[in-house]
Length: 348
Ligand code: CP
Ligand code: NVA
Image (cartoon, rainbow, N blue to C red; front, side, top):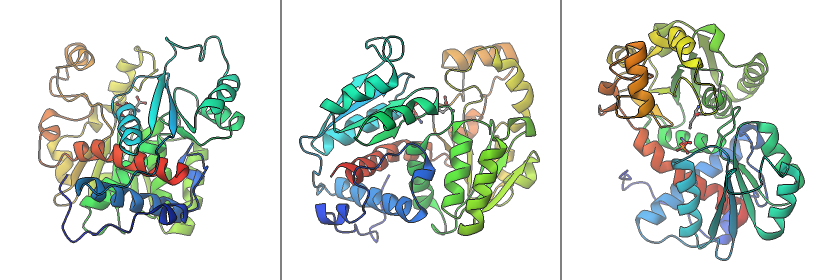
């Protein structure tokens, strides 16, 4: 994405990065950082993004290495960690369940105690949050959550950087999440939105809302940050006036395939269509962590179109996905700039 010429990078030096006081910290969930620390990470992301585009990026991670564990598949998160480490002068070793002992022959605790001997940091993507928490408990190096069923914190830095870049007022973000609101993306958007003082609406049938624990935590944070939280099943009420409309796939990685029928029955009316976008604010933007089922060019997209008579996309229509409102590819690019910021802030 082009950056406005008026945006000038904050000075980037080892001293300025260390002054953030984030050295050695884990990033397992949004709540690991204060609003001030999250804002500092977003500012650092912007500075690194501008430095990269002006070919003036300093390397803070020469000689550092990252172990990146992917028990679930990934395109964006994997390439973001890889490119960020490499551009910062470091290196990445990828591990997965099929080509290593992780998961089936060796526990998270034992894996962590091996990896910390050889690596400066560990990234983990998998199913349960308890696994990434165990890796963090048993290692003395920073551990980053690259997605679990409960949280997707590195995605949040990218989403908030992207909203800041496109918002009419970066300090007054308003967004809705429409779709399966009881999984990682909605949990994370609700919690991060509460920490960042945003106007947040989760729009879904009430059987697909986040757990009471997560909602209560977000509400208590909102009381201190000024965030506004609305959970509703009413599309018009949830979407009206927001600047950003988020969605996610309706059946997430690791969920059984037989969930599709029930999920489509619950969510068919919550597809992001042109008329839903028109309910949002003028010039509202569409956001999606990706991958998205918006046509029949993927195996799942084609199957759902055929079996459930959804010829024009699942969670979002092809028309909205291909429109100028779609900023999901800026969001995807920002995965790299924001993951680079977390690596630099915790390892430099
Ligand atoms: N958004 C996201 O996490 O993408 P990947 O699954 O491709 O990493
Ligand atoms: N909810 C999705 C997010 C993908 C980035 C999943 O867990 O599959």
